[in-house]
Amino acid sequence: MSTANEPIRRSIEVEYWVVDDDGRLVEPDDLVDAAPGVEREFVEPLLEVKTTPHATTADLREELYDRVGRVVRRGEERGKRLVPLATPIHQEEIAEHAGERTRVQNLVVGDDFEYVRHCAGTHVHVEQLPERTIEQLNTFVALDPALALCNSAPYFRGQRLAAGARSKLYRRLAYADVPHQGWLWPYVEDRAEWRRRLERRYEDFVHAAADAGVDRRVVERCFDPESVVWTPVQLRSEFGTVEWRSPDAARPADVVRLADRLASITERVRDVEVSIEGDAGRVGDEEIVLPEFDVVLGYVDAAIEDGLDSTAVTSYLERMGFDVEAYEPTTHEMDDRGPVSRADARDLRLEHAARLADEVRREVALGDD
Image (cartoon, rainbow, N blue to C red):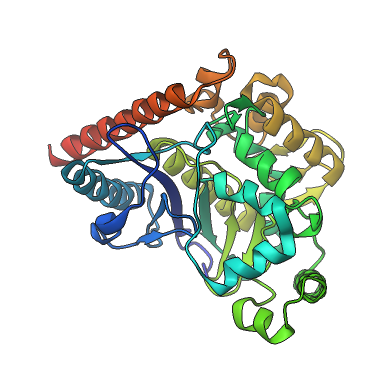
């Protein structure tokens, strides 16, 4: 945890679809051995690249680009590419890796767990402020509409779903029958309230698992109160961080920029008063004002449905300290299309895989100068 005047450390976990040279989803195989911090995800054509915590944007950026670059280069040798899109765009068979944890989730969530298999996202970890953790957590809740800055795909099964299709799949479809697991939670008063919420959600999950025929001992073996929920903003005692799980898989430049902004706002939280009032919200030099929670939810809904096409969202994010024009969410490039065919979806995957590879090559070349 950060102490007074120390730099705030932050880290990133970003998921990518893996495709072959024809744009078809494939398993990563030995791409996961290309660099440290590269892991398989619970579905076969997805991998995750993690960084270690860093106190500066330059170090975080260097490590993320280095690790992604190694995977991209290994992929070029194997006829595979990484796709920084939130969904595969069109329906294809997406198989899961066998595992007890996934089996339990399928039983509890039911058929709606299918929606989760089509989602690739980014998690940002920012280390906790020991004396201001709750203010930090509440601020991150208020910042959740910033997911619009990295919306990267509006399509699901070839049809437009929302500017932030992945967020809609998770929050409104996958967890519709267990809503408290996946929704954004309201502000909290203190750590005790946070622990009570986790414990309630854990018991809800245990009871739902029992109704689905899963023994409590199996649930306890696979989950704990912290790991059972998906709620987009979480206190993570395991890592000593506040974790924000809302952004889509996206370009490394935007992901690093987003992590940097959350760290800088956290530094502000350490030094100024944080209050909750009204419906405007702002991050200022002398105070941070968070809107009432219902107001935040309105901005979140607009961020999911319309993204940066919503003037209400862009105005809010600017008041909260984001340079909106610095981001390039790719979802808006696709929004003018009609339905997308399987062949078109494969072409889009290859296009965005090529963009990612070009971005990584440019960054590495600049770093070598």
